[in-house]
Image 1 (cartoon, rainbow, N blue to C red):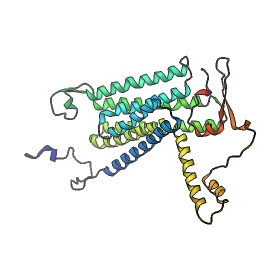
Image 2 (cartoon, helix red, strand yellow):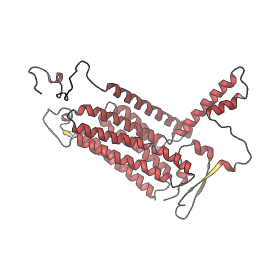
Image 3 (tube, rainbow, N blue to C red):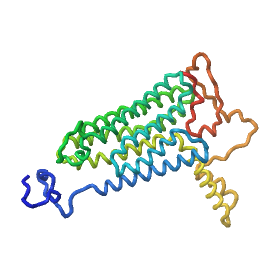
Image 4 (cartoon, helix red, strand yellow):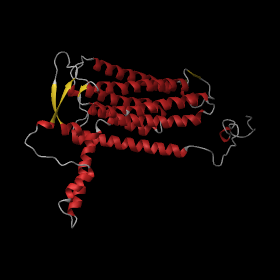
Length: 345
């Protein structure tokens, strides 16, 4: 495309329009509404999930671990990553550390186990890679200004496309490992298959993060092969937000049932109190309300033998099978504190 003399470059299109497309500078085609909707949904969901996780940890469980700090850092980084690209590496690292540290807390009972070394290996591989990726992103060109202004003199050690393609590929592989490992470990528990399935489904939500990573890889590959890279990089950014949000959700899901159970009971109590205080309502309305809300009335019996379930390690460890008693009601409401159900691998 020839540049008209005397016309500033910032007032000209960057490329010739695609075949059959007429440029419209008054009302150009864009996906601004899609960007706003995606950012709004991701930030809202991540904020609600993080807030519920904090409430559950601080006021119900009253225990705060490293994975909770990592999850909070991932949420704060998600807010920043909407404006600053270089924050991607530390943010996605924080989200993955929150998940891996939680796996360590739940499934690892001793340092002398294969699980301990496997989770540690995943942690340090992720830490090492994302530090390298952040460094390469920040210093890919000399001088650094050449990153956003290719017209100035200098050279680039590595291209932006290469860095992000390697990073996207690493994300897909690491997400698959983080998805598969806890599901395999859950199915070694000695408990009914329905509970195994329910617990596995919680961890299986990690497939959302895997799909986001795959879509980010696909869109970024398309942007690298297309002359109009800025158009496709916008789509890549949307999948990046979705990937981080899914990581925050997956890392928080095992903690959320306790908080949700308490909120549900409080709301049910308020609704029941309101209905029972209305004139003309009889005491018979209380059971109807409980049935409508799905609340079962507890039966009082002198025999509490059925209030507990046995959780045993299927393999029994190294010749020392361990048996634990856990309250059924607590087991259904609590987070996946399954660590007590394991002995050393």
